[in-house]
Image 1 (cartoon, rainbow, N blue to C red):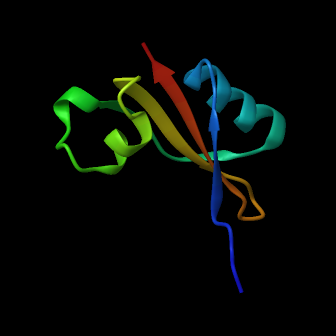
Image 2 (spheres, rainbow, N blue to C red):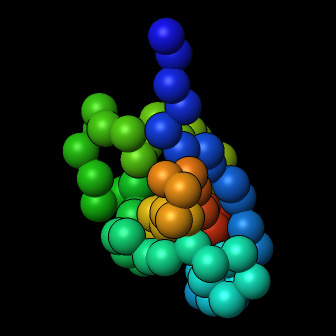
Length: 78
């Protein structure tokens, strides 16, 4: 059996998205927000895999609903 633990969504404003998911859908913040800068990371890591060569910075956070559904929100920065 395959299980999906969470999905990832890109948002234009991480702080506003966290607030919306908490207030409107009842999610709770589990971790973050975190900031990542590809230039400060080791070459081989998940952050650089996600960012590729076109985006250098991002922020993300993990949230969960009462029924166990998880989301990871990403804000890619220029």
